[in-house]
Image 1: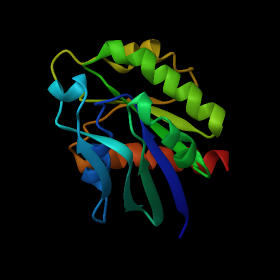
Image 2 (image 1 turned 45 degrees about the vertical axis):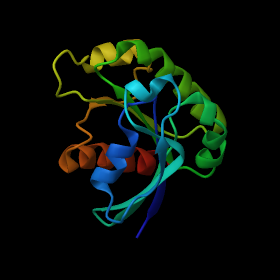
Image 3 (image 1 turned 135 degrees about the horizontal axis):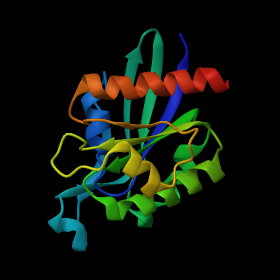
Image 4 (image 1 turned 30 degrees about the vertical axis):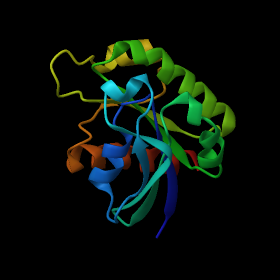
Length: 173
């Protein structure tokens, strides 16, 4: 049974922890802590080191490593990107000002470990959400990169994302 390490990354509040908790077959190891900065008005907790979950998909085991979204925890990105087979950049579709930050995250992870990746627009079911064309433009994702919508609270939606990731890994291996 193939094992794959996939890093789930993206800007602050893009849904990384929710994504992993929704699909994981095991209890998620989470390092969420109460927010003490000005971001506390947005949500109560943030990931300070990583989240870890695991999902089995059609005979494949996907190890999901969630990276912290705040740049002050960037030191974890190098650690999590080591030996990754692919990464998924989550983007809050309702927050276009965060799209350039997603571009910077793509650049950083690609420089650390040049593996295949997807750009995924979360919260795509909400009113005012950007479509995949707008997300591609805002994140400056190249034409060869898949950009797709996802609802991080629906297991079936996340499953489609992970199946795409596994296909990418197998195609580029």
